[in-house]
Amino acid sequence: MDQRWHQALNYEALVRANKNSEAKAQQAFAKALASLDTTEPLLLHLGEYASLLGVAEDLLSEAYFACRPSFEAMPSAVQVLTWEHPLWPKQVDSFAYCPRFLYVQGNASLLSQPSISVIGTRSPSLEGKKSAVQSAYAIGKRSYVVASGLALGIDGVAHKTALDNGFPTIAVLGTPLTSCYPPEHVQLQEAIAERGALVSRFAPSSQTQKWFFLLRNRLMSALSLASVVVEDRDGGGAVRQAAFALEQKKYLFFYQSSLDNHSFLWPKEFANRPRVFVVKQAGDIPRVLEKAVKTREQVGKVVQKSVQLDLGL
Image (cartoon, rainbow, N blue to C red; front, side):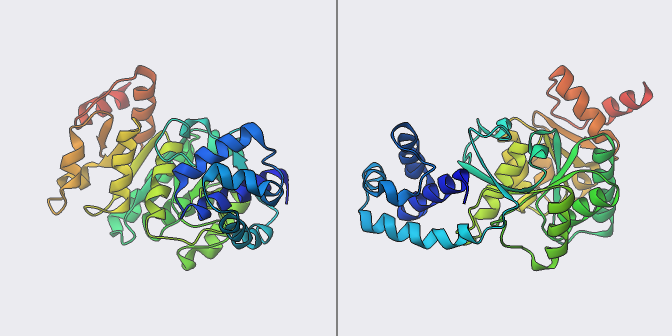
């Protein structure tokens, strides 16, 4: 294992020994950085680490040995990014639940390039699938990275559209890189690793939990300039990411068709909020976003008239 892998393994041992709570582990690791060589195996400084975390040495040693086999089995193609790494995406630093390490397979430089998330339900309508294709195409054609979460439905359509058209795409995973969820997307995950980038905040020793996917959505939003919710139900993962995007002062897009669908409440709850744009067609997304970023306008209403003016220029 290289030095960053050792650092990440040491950190994950701290997390596991602290009952999988990251806050205290981050504090202990920060202190270790100031006084220890964190690139060396934790066992060389077991007493110091245990003291910093406030746990017994045997408990920390047990956690270390539980985590180590997964790190040793991690493919050599995986890059471990730390806050200090030159490829670390700085746009995630100021947001809640910022991870201490990121695990990346593929082109890690894509994480720092302007990206837009295309997300939505796992059970899309035919119109939703069509909108997902059009959204990913419009975004990729405008030289943005297409980000999504590798899920069934809208996410998978967005990734495949990007790959089919030679556009870069990032899959932000809710599992370690050494796993694949859903299993139906094994080949898609492999293709993205080869032609785009896979990124996870979860170490190979992590045991996937349902709440991992909310952390995945927080990270995806933080990495992206904006999130496009193509189609989703009330309380769905994409809607949760929409809330994260606004919390992070990012931009949010969704379609007029969602606002017109009286079966769902979420579009009306978001439509009149700052940095939210409701559009009729996918081609409007990159143009409206570029104008918003350039002028720092915060438009909190349906922007069809503005879009039509843009298109008439």
